[in-house]
Amino acid sequence: MAGQQGATSIADFEKSLDELETLVRNLEQGELSLEQSLTAFERGVKLTRACQQALKGAEQRVEQLVQNGDGTLETRPFSPDDAD
Image 1: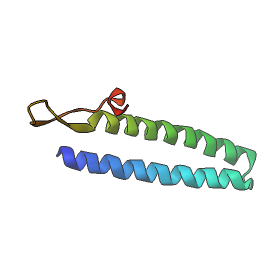
Image 2 (image 1 turned 30 degrees about the horizontal axis):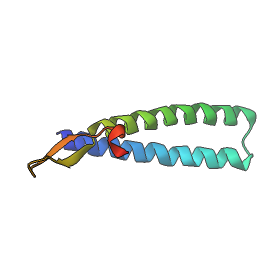
Image 3 (image 1 turned 90 degrees about the horizontal axis):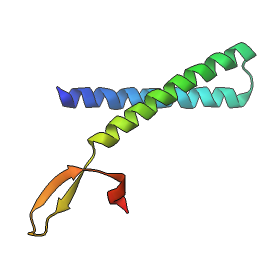
């Protein structure tokens, strides 16, 4: 069931990102009325926050495979400090 929820989250993220790209494109074209632009901007802010939240959740789920001193392998939660 967790895998299905993860797949849904990925699909939702991709859908939100696609919608956000469309909103940005429409805003850049400059053909929207002021009211339409404000509505698109507000929607874009909501989508951006949703995408950031999804990415934060994904980051927390990422694990790294590490080799111990005795040669055994284990997984540990990924920490940005480990990337250095």
